[in-house]
Length: 115
Image 1 (cartoon, rainbow, N blue to C red):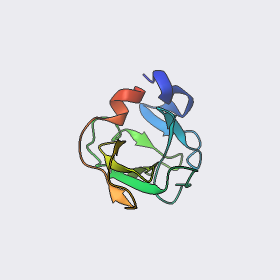
Image 2 (tube, rainbow, N blue to C red):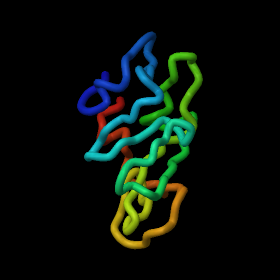
Image 3 (tube, one colour):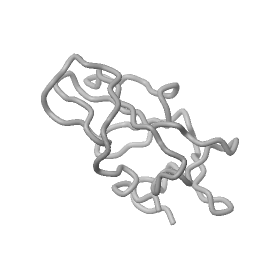
Image 4 (cartoon, rainbow, N blue to C red):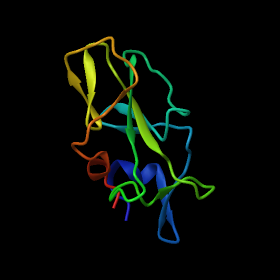
């Protein structure tokens, strides 16, 4: 079942969560998230791109598919100049470091309601 913020971005078909529009961002906590760096679009104020790989056995994203039945390999988002990638979010400090890979931490899937 999809609840919360993810409801507008995913639909269920045959037990799979299908991404409705891969090129469009998924908004959570006033920040756009993308289904891979090839879809990432830098937005004003978010100059540092962050990436979090998605493992095939991931409890939250392991059941998410593109419409062609392939799986996204990463989630990407942008942090501000004085922020750094931490988990699936941005933390204060640092700056001027781009394309960082986030560490394991709070699950975005938990927060947006992918089950």
